[in-house]
Length: 321
Image (spheres, rainbow, N blue to C red):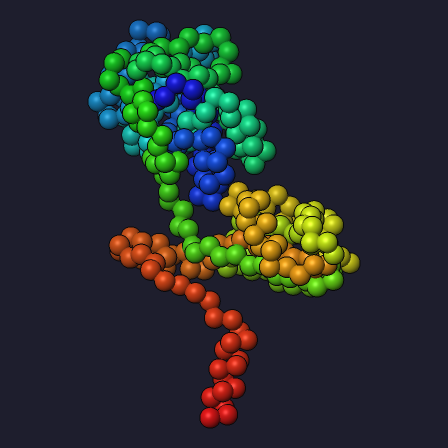
């Protein structure tokens, strides 16, 4: 990987809607990995463990040997391997005693953005397993994740996987090498204007109901107001709530798809002295259908939405004919 990149490894997979935010914040690639942890009888067993991993087709990015011993006197070890590892494959690593696995995602991040990205991931419920900062400049120079105290990093043999998935000058798309098992439905947006700065919250319980029933998923929800002079100001959720309407359900609903430019463009359509809610949502009900079309090679070439008013007008014309 290119100089100036670091790696952040987090437990689990990352939701698809997070990718635009991560790309914009300096993430240059993601790949699915698995942390294998357990113990070996002694240090002499480490080469055999690596041989087994290699024979099973596991690309070892990092092998971490702890200085502590387990209850049986063995040496605690942790491996980071590319891809997923199932129960059968784990059982075939017989040199790894009491083996356990943690699916994870490793992100290649610009060094200046590491703290920001790691903090954001933590705030959104992801456990950061470790970082390599900066990345090794040469293949084979694998290092242990930060935070594993008292251990010794053991470099994997040449050609056994160093995590250098891309060319030195290649900025891989953030979708590359991500395990996308989640079906993503069509994503729409709505801009609803409320004249005279009176946000009516009576529809929000119905929005919550749509989310609870899995019909939609709210990706972004923002509120703005446009004063008499045409100046646009953001409104916090608690400011937008009125009466007994509780909007705390949507607190933190931000995927990064809705940017400042999008909000400014939406505000251009507002009348002075009005307010608006801007909603970006995924149509979960259509996700299996959309995924089946994609798997079959289908692609969307046109779409649109017919306003209800236009439908009613057309029906009136038919009745009058």
